[in-house]
Amino acid sequence: MGNNTSKTQSDTSSVSEPVYNEKQTYPDSDSLSSQSQITSILRQLNIGDTTSNSTNGINSAEDLGAWESDFNSNLKNSLAQSAIAKNDIYSVIANPSSGAGVQHQYLFNTELKTVGSPGCYNNQASSGRCWMFATSNVLRAHVIKNYNLKPDQFQVSQAYLFFYDKLERANYALDNFIATADEPLDSRYVGSVFSDAVGGDGGQWDMVVNILDKYGIVPHEFFPDNAQAGASSTLNYILKEKLREFGLVLRKLKTQGALEVVILQVKKAMMKHIYNVISICLGTPPKPSDTFTWEFIDKDGKFQALDTTPTDFYKTHVRYEANKSFSLVHDPRNEVGALLTVDKLNNVSGGRPIQYVNTTLDSIKQAAIKMIKADEPVFFGCDVGKFYDRQTGVLDVDQYDFGLAFGSGFNVSKKERLQTGSSAMTHAMTLTGVHLDKAGRPVRWKIENSWGDAVGDKGYFVMTDKWFDEFVFQVVTSKAYASKEDYATWKSQEYTVLPFFDPMGALA
Image (cartoon, rainbow, N blue to C red; front, side, top):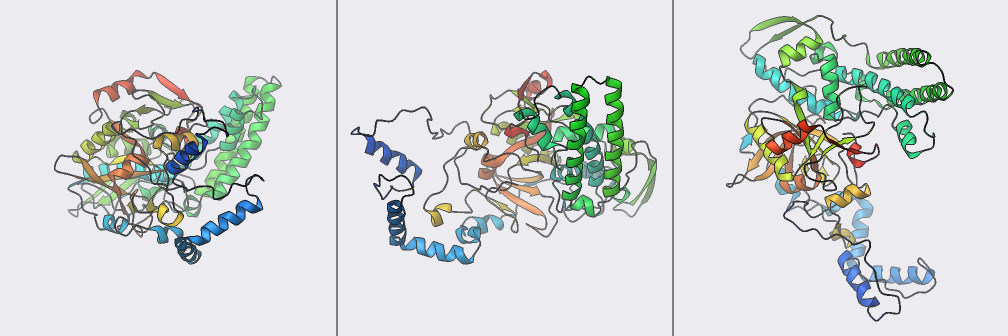
């Protein structure tokens, strides 16, 4: 989760953003205009002047003395220093007219009619499985609707998705080690592959499509979370270390000219070991073709018992074709209309690649609004760590005033945050409502999070539309709700390939 929260200007196409020109030339130090250039730059940064003309280098004793004197001359600095010494910074700089106001706006004129309960197995705990929980909240809404179920009595198994994603991602990592064996181990690319290893818990929509298509899904009660699913760091450590060890062995076999059949047999034995590790930690889930009986009582008190399998349950009882949905993203670094993918980023070898249709914020919002009006929950990806309050569930760019305490806020655009590593998709959640003004424009959005029902408004968060502009990157939609242009881009399968370490390769 990101922690560099900042108040910035919107990246909408109709707004001109102030961007620093890295190639701009400045006068020599003896030029008459040097001081005016310095003053202009410092005014733009809103950080005052140097208060010292020392020639002894930066951070000299003369500098420190001048800076201290200037700091102490401003009584507001002493007040800020005292307040922050005894309190959390965010509580000190909270803007009561913003955060508190939005907190009381959990009212929306456009909401889903069918949605599951945030209190029903919807807490990812100490794991990075938000993308699986967001997907689960999409899937269960369809089952609830199909079978007239109570919203607080049904959820699909996130642990089932988790198990098979771990298994497939381990296999994908081993394939990557073999594929890059001829490249230097200390190259940036191979280093990234080894550093990522099994990839932690994070993932993306296309990855969950791969798991659903191959393994299906089961109701929560047939493979519930255990202690390791809810606190996955040790499992991830074991898998990463073993995969790196295995990767070195496979690289050596490949570079020494071992027969392909030898490499594949060694890899298969490695995968059996990985399966054992995951099973010990998470338990052994049903296989895709295993038969089980799903029993339930609907809202009308009617009992039903259905014989099914994981793949059949997904196809017959969920009745939602995830593979027909795709991601719209807003990445200001890249051309609108580009179909983006990320090299060597996936979970299933030979599976559907990462696919992002880069489009405008307006196109993304319109698709989301249409889906909500059609009673379709919306999977979306964002940078949740910016300007948010976990307890109140408020996401609002105006709720913290950094300038109040530190004399200066932040002036970095969405594009620049991506370029400098300040921002990326760190979290996936589900949109369940939107409040529209009289002209049909969004004002705020209702979110179902996956942190349980003890945070926000009983598990729901509220996001201002300004926050959406700055920190939402992705909405998953389908042909029925996307523009013709965006759908055509997705169907073209003509990719702009981003490197493995690109910010759009960050996994929610």
